[in-house]
Length: 246
Ligand SMILES: [Zn+2]
Image: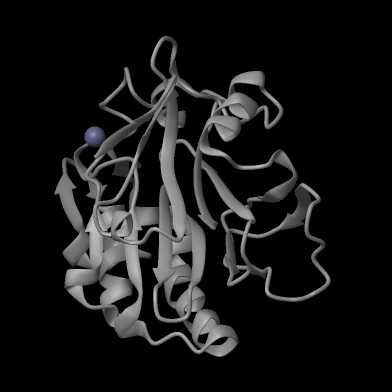
């Protein structure tokens, strides 16, 4: 669903809105100018957006994303509170049970995934492109939440945000061979890859109940007025997707 905060809107999950101790959102947009570009992390409208949500700009944590499967844990005490972290290290997921840190993932076609365990109040944000999906990043994130926070898969809520949908996502044989037939539809000599479904299957294989999984069913490629798409426009612009434990 779209929710509006004064000048800005974000896409939110009805499952996650049941919890008042978190703030989350996908792909913020300005009501007057459209999608907010997160590629410039200091853009005035982005800082304005945080302000409207009541989030301090000193509590942001972003990482250098590389389509891998490395996970940054913010549970360690080495991470300072009250300092923005724009890490240059390569990670494609962030997990924490610490309060008042905004964990952000940037996307434009890859699937952003937010995980939250209301039993242990731990959460994660994941950058789910095809390469990370092939490396089973979701399964690894859940495993790490289990190890670090004692999270049980059955309690975890998972939300898939705006990313390229299957009918827009044509891939060649080289990519297709990394995925099971159940997430591929042949078209001419290519395939259409269902990346949302592929992540969902991994969530279920990891023990997350089907009823705890929500796909917002938003496509960055064909909903062109609402989203940036790298594949459509070769743009450098990116959406922010975030989780903040209050
Ligand atoms: Zn589409």
